[in-house]
Image (cartoon, rainbow, N blue to C red; front, side):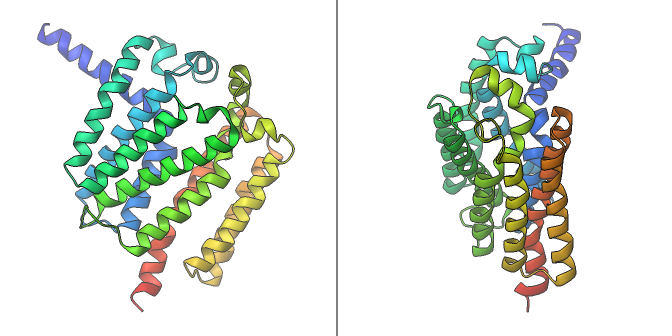
Length: 290
């Protein structure tokens, strides 16, 4: 291969890898990075690069596994993704998925056995989700995805900290709370995909409970916000602002029901999640040193 050809193909393939994860940059990479920085807390700023790459390479493996399951769904909902866009064949994407598995394990092992354990847990849960068809039912989908996300956060927090082999109590509590929140509010990401999910027969909460699913977002976000205000001991002004934000985002799910509007609501939910991830920093600053 000539140098010119190499210069043309490398950017092309790098963009293909990016496109596999593009839709999850705002919903996973940024929030989980913030989470790790706060929950660890971050050992030094240079470690952020390690955290972001560890999150992204594991996300890439998961997203490819997700997108090879049913490219038909993506051709309807997300036609710009690499497989429906024709940037990579289904066969090559499948090969890449399995090549990335030992790559993720080897990279995690460079940090510690505990980080490797988080990586292995994510791989097993991904198999349960796809090959085990946990994604087909709303309950198993939410639970498996939430636990997988918790393993994501645990691994990223270990990479961010001063000791790759242990996580302090505040960080561990943050992981547990986040996992519970994900399990009970993950349907925020399903509203915008109802049409595609109907097409492949997937039973998500918005499909199974069309009447209750939207109010569940309003109630869930408010209740979790009140609990978080008490757990992290927010002052009155911050508590009112946070609960108010939660109510506004939750109300949007109830009031605006078109697909494009659900996409915006999902992004606002990601914003809410990012605020949730920052709350342990409030506790550390105002209470842990007291």
